Length: 85
Length: 548
Image 1 (cartoon, chains in turn red, yellow):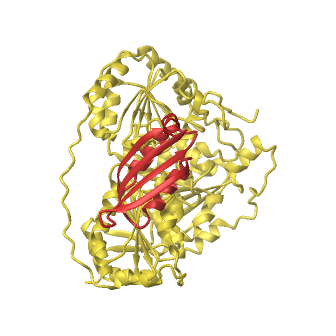
Image 2 (tube, each protein chain N blue to C red):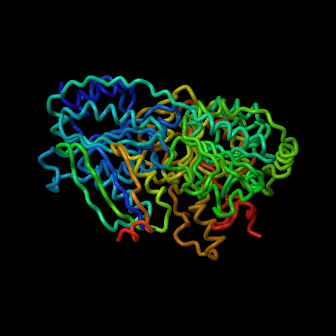
Image 3 (tube, rainbow over the protein chains, first blue to last red):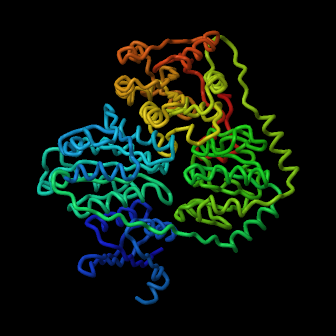
């Protein structure tokens, strides 16, 4: 199952690494990734597509726990991604 | 005031009067500040000992434990302890020195990317980048370590920030969050409890961490629902509570495992469906609807899909779930299983039977004794055969299963609770893994009692080799162990060796009545195994009880 996510967070030097470590460790592969800082480097906005056999909520709940993460949104899952392609 | 002095003052503001650590180059400014800073520091003899002592301190009190190490190898030596604290949700703040800011990323002497290393084994980690950040980071670290689901937090402080001027920081007084309990969920839970014919409580370490022991016991008192516990849940329920069936899982009691497999409603309280608890997950509690109470939303539906979950503070939820129910047949079944499957201590021959030894120790030890264990067969025998009535009195590396944990954890517990008896129960494999902490015991003259159960084997691995690897005892035979009593005597710790049942009573008396530290070294047969055992991949009711 492919899932398209956005993550809003307060930026810190290691935040991207921290997020991606959780994605990998919890059993998800990154297929696309875009990261940009906003508000004078204060915040980090991440858009990513991940693939896994596992339920996406297993990942989103872990991401939401990370200190500094303010919002995790699941935009679409496989069927919708295909339909829009 | 420089940054290092600021850190010591901040520790005091967080009511930290005791820290554990080991000095080194990049943390020297902080050690200079500790020299006369008014916070007691206990020098452990390895950074792993320091972090495990901080864990023992935290687990025996419920307060945050603090450890300190230098950069590079000092920091890497903390990693196993941080991982242990992570798995067992223990509030620990670890402070590491780092090379000066301008040297970071240059492969400087004793430089390692501890922030990167810590990502997988801390709840959060910080590197202080400038003096302004120091105050807010320390405050956030203590808040994070202790709040929600507790865990370890690391603060890495470059040497130049320790030496530079500190920046005053006005502490933010947060308004306490008033938590709204979901009344609809409460009503649904009450209906599920009332409808159940065979409800069962599955109690984990979260109850103790939430300081919800009293509400849990009150809930049990009202509902009279039978209960089981996890390794970390030991002590949450009084051991002699009527319908308490003991520990569940791989080395759980038969009564607990059968009850899990038969119940029609499982109420998981501060527990996380660990594989050592569930056995074959698909066949765990196959007839049960599940209510899951846990402060960590990420644990809900992680392994077992549940009918109802609540993530509010257990102290607020449990009183709202008290309801009188009529489940006499199920209660009777629980009582019958308790009697039918009670532990037996009859054992042929003169050789010491470790379960009976530990039972006797539990009967002889003073009330409020803290038992710290290492990892292996002795750890499971402690869980099965000793009885504990406070989670703070049973300190056992549960999630990570860290050999070498017992002695430093006992050091931390003894420092935290000097008036209570502290006993480290260890095995000959584990004991050698942090044996240098005998030096810490000697240095502080800590009256830690050590019960070393020695089968000259890595017993748990040997047991699995016997059962599942055709008796091929690969690297588990330790007949070349040192003379443990002589070893202890080198640290001014008196001791003795016993090997027969007739010696037990007097030897335990000497252990408990010795003025200072004491080593009771107990030789047992390598043939003794831990029973029952749910083999890997089997359902919990498929327990092995002997080699036959």
